Image 1 (cartoon, rainbow, N blue to C red):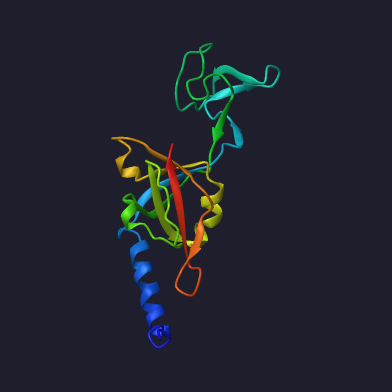
Image 2: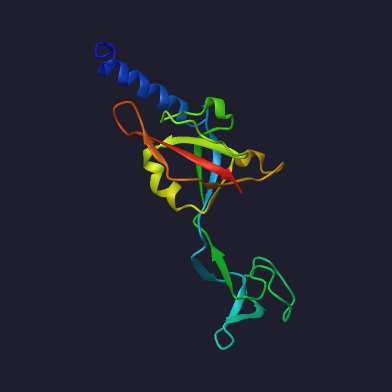
Length: 172
């Protein structure tokens, strides 16, 4: 009955519509994917003492943040190392109101407070699965940090293809 309605042209209209929703400055907001800190780099601001394996608390000649010799380096707080992150800003479609969530199953879900749904392109799957947490809408960071952690496995979605990803997030 519906075989005549689902044409390649109809699928293209669907894909073009979702791609438009997910385009930058459309219905997406800038989000920050935060990853586990795994890399430490020597402090850019102070000399490193290899014997004590921490900061010598002596400013480098080209120190960006000046500090008196013998006091604690303000950049690394005396550790000699600075954690580097691979945090990444991405544009995602976030749906806060559960009545507008995309429902890919026929089961009724129990929705705890503080849940959101995220829609993005499938190529973000590895990043979504490996991030520690997400800060939603970095434009609002002056007001509050909307920190969320992934709640369950992301689900591939699409209309006859898996071009998109739906994920659920719980407020941290």
